[in-house]
Length: 551
Image (cartoon, rainbow, N blue to C red; front, side):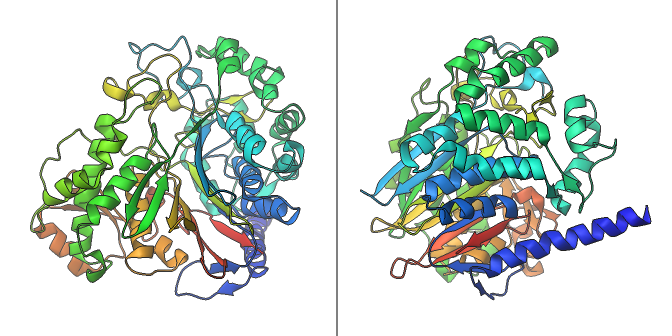
């Protein structure tokens, strides 16, 4: 046991040493932050795991563009942060393409199987919780339309990472331990995460040979290898044995969809985010509500700013909850909700002296899991990508497909009982993911993303405000203390001043204190681009094992 503990300690040290060395290759700016802010002139990737960021930069150095790098990092993060995403899941990507200034979004959200019924409540785990995965289709579509490299080359780092393994960090180790009971109910998942019968520990190596073989099949055969080949047969076989709903036809019919992003403005900056059925609309509405107030004159951690933001957040989330669903099934009033006149109307409802007891237009969704992952990529040509991927809860349906290493999502539970997000066969469920790009006069200045369920819709406006209203660097903006309003309860990181919390209590809030850098708030990643020099600075969230790599 003593030897094992020494191995853990050495492994943890090597884990962070490797991350620090990769950072120094780009040049480190020493701000007053927990993680360093990284600067680079050519290309950069920021993700929730050092190996994923390194995978993306490896592709940039080989001549790939930001799309190639983002796809490489997305496959790799599904290997290294397998609690939060993977090829059994889904996501959304927002792209800025420097040639022509094109903005577009790729929706690879999962869909309800044809046999899914609104009369049956989906379980939270097991085969019956699984929706048709979209990750492989979405990443392949992005690469085919906007990348420059072949899939085999872009997937090589992820395959190598799955085959050779990586050192488990404290965050992943803790999540495995916290979910051990649920994990142990599925033999295939247990074999991945608890190969010796106990949760893999921080500092130990995690290899996934079955997943490496699955990725190799996709690398050689493209999206069809997942949706109609041997892997599809194995997925359907598990569905049939375990009572799941996905059929061969469901997989064969799945398509990723290219959509127009939602767009708005905040103090002269253009905010471009992921369209329905996900959360960009709420992010922009919240920012446009806040535009009616002189935020920069408020202390960043003061009660005036926190209360104002909480009130704007509640309104934006309520409107999103009441109106957003799959646009292929329901009409979403995007233009009305993002009009400046509507934002001013919502802003006028906010009383600076008291909390609003009940916000109209629907109730926010449940808080949900802090799972999901986000990453951003930038290249030397001016292209930017922000994407968010998920398998919903940590380890999704707590169910892996035997012999493949593929952990499946539990997205079916994200449909609502009624309204625009009600379940229907082939429909994409609503979620809060909202990768976002910020521009100034048509030139990109930032790419941002975060996981964190309902906190996604509140964290991203905070990040944008920290950068625009307060001139914070990207790492400082990410690390700034966060809060989350749910009715009159305000969840806060304990770094807020006591005077702020006392003043908020007097306004009617019930304060729920959390950790200093709490996993509840997800793990944001971001890149800022200097419009004059094109120099990039990247930030990664210490709430997870985030890392930035650039060159």
